[in-house]
Length: 363
Ligand code: COI
Image 1 (tube, rainbow, N blue to C red):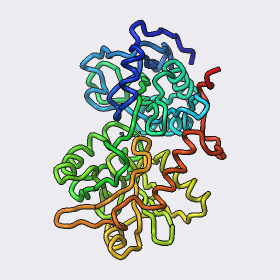
Image 2 (tube, protein in one colour):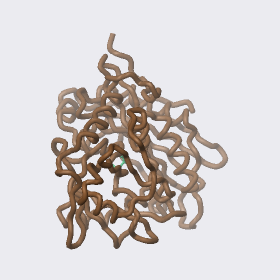
Image 3 (cartoon, rainbow, N blue to C red):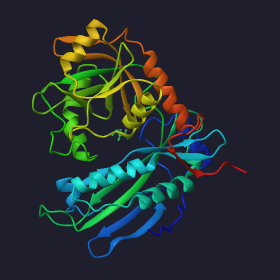
Image 4 (cartoon, helix red, strand yellow):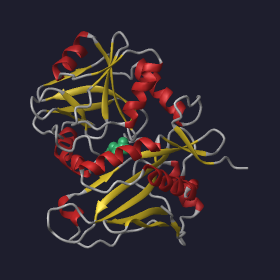
């Protein structure tokens, strides 16, 4: 894909940008540019451009607005110790987007085009990559079906977009254990459905349960499987990992209803490297409750691109609650978190070749 470059005339001034970077929050502010490309069955991918960030003009009869034919991704660019910038595992996100596109009957964007779009946006808006380890530049690629018409069928016209947002922690404030609400009424996804695809519909399906969690004073909702309502799947916006008292890591296996998280894979790989036993298997919610009470489950954490590695405190359900360990962030959680962060910010050797350097250090 060849990108036409159309620079933004009205870029945010350095002072306002610095104010945004000082406390970016998550997904609140966006950089000066975005990438756009179009696809149709006859021309394939075309009209790829880097352009000023701004609203879209979209026909109200576009397929995505009615039938939600869309997918998205999330990945981050990190400021490196020498002042340059690197993306973390962009090829993994590109590959997962292809898998999501297959499930949503969308055209595949080749890995090299996905990565080239990320490179171009990060290079152009490099001034928006925060300094310091509390923040990074979150990239949000998305693909939407924009064929106009109300027939329920795969769209003949599609648009790829890529936007970027300086981001701090997904959960507000300094690192703290989050509280979880166990919903056994609502399910997020079923095997054979779209749970393993990163599509907006999965997140839409999570919202009523997420509201229920917040109404009970919890940060996030935990979903269990759609058939027996007892096997732990994931949280609304991240995967989940249990640390046993002998250092074993246990995480729900990828059943087809669970998002194959890039951070999940990163953590499991680093844990194996560090000599932890890792089990990907079904986890009964009663194993969680009993394990937390008996001490067999010593720590629990959430992991995702936005969540990074976030310790989990109490698990609550109607009429009960349990906390693994003493409720403070556990040593294995904190050690793995530090390893992931050190790798992403280029402070430890990149033995897996996960960092893609996109901006060189200043001369
Ligand atoms: C991510 O971690 O990148 C996600 O997409 C999760 C959520 C913020 C939607």
